[in-house]
Image (cartoon, rainbow, N blue to C red; front, side):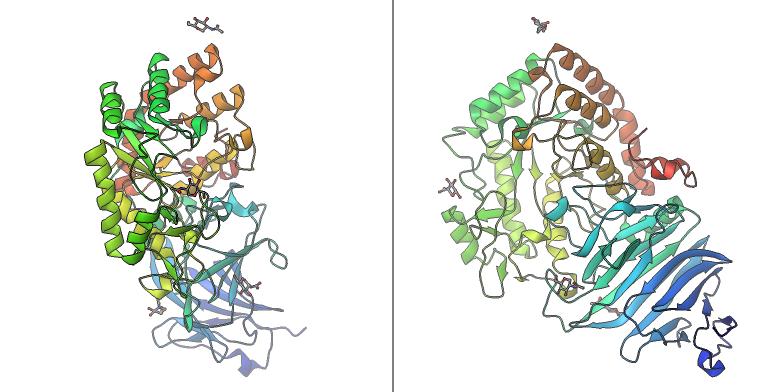
Length: 587
Ligand SMILES: *[C@@H]1O[C@H](CO)[C@@H](O)[C@H](O)[C@H]1NC(C)=O
Ligand SMILES: *[C@@H]1O[C@H](CO)[C@@H](O)[C@H](O)[C@H]1NC(C)=O
Ligand SMILES: *[C@@H]1O[C@H](CO)[C@@H](O)[C@H](O)[C@H]1NC(C)=O
Ligand SMILES: *[C@@H]1O[C@H](CO)[C@@H](O)[C@H](O)[C@H]1NC(C)=O
């Protein structure tokens, strides 16, 4: 192999064409102005760029399908670029100051039927990765996750309710993919072992009619993960503008779901309230979950289950409860009156053939529709009917379910910038429901870090392990905090008891203990269905949590000021500690 000198390309003056040297494997370097970070180009079977600081490698990125003979060239704007004749990749400096280097890497265009892919070395074993998507099998750090050509939108598959396009690692490096990019990811996929790859493809679930799309992402380099994250919060993720209701922090939410499932009635709810009081527990609110509606989407109480909702909420309030209600964004086809009204008003998400048919967990295929929250008229109509539940039926607030963009019909027609679809519908749903006040809880998110509301972790199973069990309550909590959502409402203590498998006494109590130092407690399985010891222990830990209310509220306030997480991973206090970097269970 021929020896090749390293050619250093400086911003303004001299940059030398390696081709002029007649050498095929020369490295090229480009130093960013006012920063000690530079980029080095490598030619092997694939072209790679490497972010460097002095002799230290910060990140190596493989351009999976880009011509290898391409050269770095300076641009007229003082940045530099690579070109293959059709596509140009531009590296531009956004900021270099206070130890932060912030770059954007963008293609001028992505054509239909191409899937450019940039792969970041995970360096598993000594570098650890955080952020990324909420997952059912949720590891932490996140370098263990596996994805193959996985569209990156909030979606039902894999419990991906909160999925900002943001990753950071223990070296102080972050990656943020712009939301105009139709993003797919591969991680440890075949051919992409030990890498996380981002790619752009004009294909469903994105707007498949686009002629071109952007493939644009931002990179940050800071002294450690904490500094990188604080910078990302400030410039990219945003921080909350306020914080949720204090009583939801102090006392438990009691939900009818895990115990009664869809068998809720006036009588069941009254009996549940009585049990809570008889056993000496306090409440922030009693939540009436599925299935209280006339029919799915009606937003009116079914009279044969709840003959007089106002009387019920009045009575519960006299007993010291606040009352909240489970709400979803669907209308089932057989909820005929409201369905026809919504359909004729243009309130349903249609596909390009004009069909509104979709499916959710409470419908058969094609038996439901999804409200189009990208329309202002729908936002107003939905809000108005929720307010009626408050004023006429005495409901205090709501638990908003779903919201992920995957619930719409395949190939939907939506409003908004075509490059930001379907993400826009999730954002618009959340912004609509967040107007209902500081007791609101949601379970999905998309560029909504500013909202002062609780974001619930998607339903957990009554298991111990990685498959959506207790350990993942903690890892999902950490991930949401590092997506910029610090007001996390953990799911029900002991899990949901799906598949007729309720939690054991020990699982229930360990779950409660793990939950004590999270923002809020939510019971649905109840201590008194186990034994007296369970009641006593549950009281101790419920009170311990209540005692920490002032401290939790202080952290809530702090997050609105500085954007710091409320429940940070342990490395937050020791970013360079190799042991802290991999802790996921509060040990
Ligand atoms: C990725 O998935 C999309 C469909 O969602 C498909 O069109 C594309 O060909 C896939 N790419 C690869 C490399 O498999
Ligand atoms: C695509 O990127 C270019 C250059 O960064 C930008 O000017 C343009 O607005 C982007 N397009 C979209 C749809 O965001
Ligand atoms: C609607 O259909 C579901 C089954 O999909 C059924 O359980 C329910 O009773 C029906 N509701 C009405 C109002 O007909
Ligand atoms: C539980 O405690 C209650 C009240 O203190 C008592 O009446 C009951 O016998 C106890 N049950 C058991 C199984 O110990």
